[in-house]
Length: 154
View 1: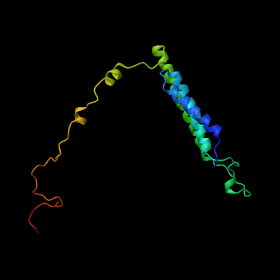
View 2: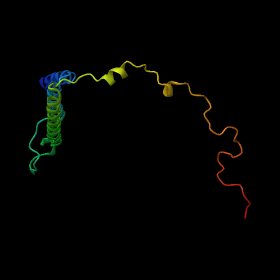
View 3: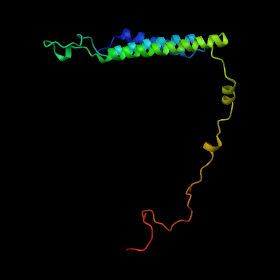
View 4: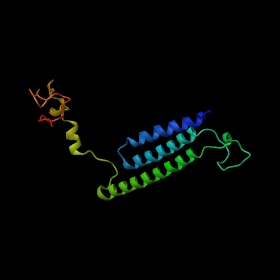
């Protein structure tokens, strides 16, 4: 199987532009980044699908190797629907942001800034653990494999 180098270059450019747009603070640019990334994913699935062939409808005269694989087409259709749903959701978020604050830029949260300036030392996670952590000190009366209660035998 040989892949088309032009398709790979276009796919790389779409991924690069999409990721760049996702890192912006404007929600409109984030939406455009999601759409561009969705198109890059569609090209990736298309190029991974293999060579072109006949439509996957049964004909007795055709060998099985001459058909095209329908799975990449189904995956691309699914990716298109998912991208559309995420786009609609993001449009709702952008509209809500515009109605509330008259801006589509994600602002810094004061609590996030406070947490980012805190020390990374956590007393519970970073404190030294004692070597012997058993709860039952000096309880050697019951051997590890013995689970029967000591009592009279019948």
